[in-house]
Image (cartoon, rainbow, N blue to C red; front, side):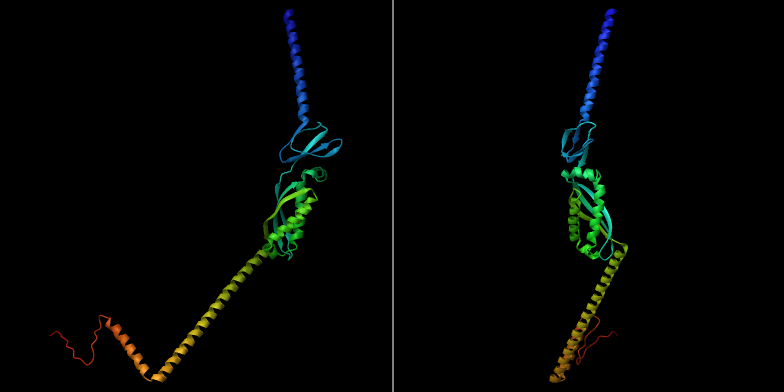
Length: 281
């Protein structure tokens, strides 16, 4: 009994030592894990220190160490991201314009500490809508409604240049700026439709006028031709006398005889010859 009690005591002491070692390893692993953080591809991190504030250094991709509880990483996505910003503004001729601007943006990595300190993690929500509205209102006000349609490329280029310059003051890079949607108010749309209808009616009226003018010219040319023909006939009669009339009579008689000879129900009997008809008794 004394032997088994001693063995049990030694085993309990061994399990207690193993438990303490496991607890120490768990605590150590937790400390080490809390002292590590990862920065994925296309991201950057800013370190916030509880005693010194936001650090100026920007942490790149990979696994890094920090002081647990004292330091905290704030990770930013530095890849280009799209954002659509709808704006309602007015043109130079006071027409309502609905514009949607598509922007590809990303932060300047070296300015991430300033962005986090002065704007915050949601910098795109705070900056892009306001500066986009400001720039679009300023640019669109330089053009009237018709120029916004015919000079759309120029409008897009000016918006891109002004917006890129404005965004750079906040530490943002705009990789692409494009106008994806451009419509006008109901009144302007109806006016454009009425103008198109009026232009179509004007084109139709011009076609009718041109057709009447062509018909008039054709009638004049035909009348001139008839006058010339009558003059030629009159001159011929004066020169040839009745001979031309007799010639026309002979030609008409010849044509009539030719037409009658082709008919089966008509028999041609020459004049001045006796013809014997056998009549039934």
